[in-house]
Length: 105
Image (cartoon, rainbow, N blue to C red):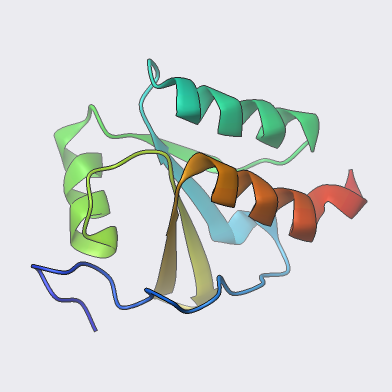
């Protein structure tokens, strides 16, 4: 459940494993060095992940409504149709991508 004051309800829960990068989306800003770090790993692993720039008010609103924070980068993980886990922090995102998609590269 989403609480507008606390954010998404996945605090403390481990990020779910998905079987395809098509179930991932990266919310980012072009000028953000942490986002660039994540995007470099995405390119290194050869992943095709949808990217949403939060300079676009519509994408920022989607990030706020889903994840509860305006912080980027944020990896949205669709673990069931229409159900999302929002993973913040560049190093956590990089670790997740390497752990679950690194062997495929």
